[in-house]
Image (tube, rainbow, N blue to C red):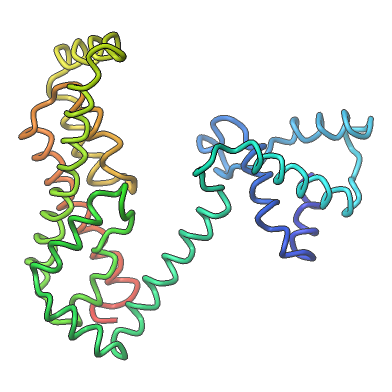
Length: 268
């Protein structure tokens, strides 16, 4: 069922963005819960689309029609997309580019003498500032700790480095908490119902969400602000939320540092 699309992808690489966009648009709900854990359209859905288009669920569309369809559908989605929304294929390419940059820096660290000297001159205060920016993931979604081998080669010590990065990321997450707190104060009328339900939830479960916040910060590779901002809105204490975030950030950065050191070597 997917074979014609794979063949056209191999023959026409320029269609990859449109094909990725179509695959994402046709993804089934809950695709991440069952093997092969990929956002691919189900066979049942594809058979239905073929039957409505050709009158035969086993029809094999010609390559020219596949090309025409994915190009047209990608163009329609692009036109209907609200301004400022980044398409999925662009996000995938951006992530791939970031991974390539991280690998290049850590593998070529021995040749980047001028960069190493500049980073060493900035010291732990510079590292703290960079970690604050990376910690506020709405600004920069790349954690500084992925450059751990580069930092080690630049003369930083392991424990102070991890502590500085974790502290800086927590300060960045603090900005998210302040945003949530300010939103709560400004949303007296429009979000009065939601605010009442949120505060009732806080009254019933005072400590469980803090434990979930720690686990999320420690093991989820997503912005902490996704939980920090709502928890501030629900009146969870600044001290409790930031303590959970700090502990989670320490675990997360330690795990990432060990991972990148294993991949690239302690000094690459």
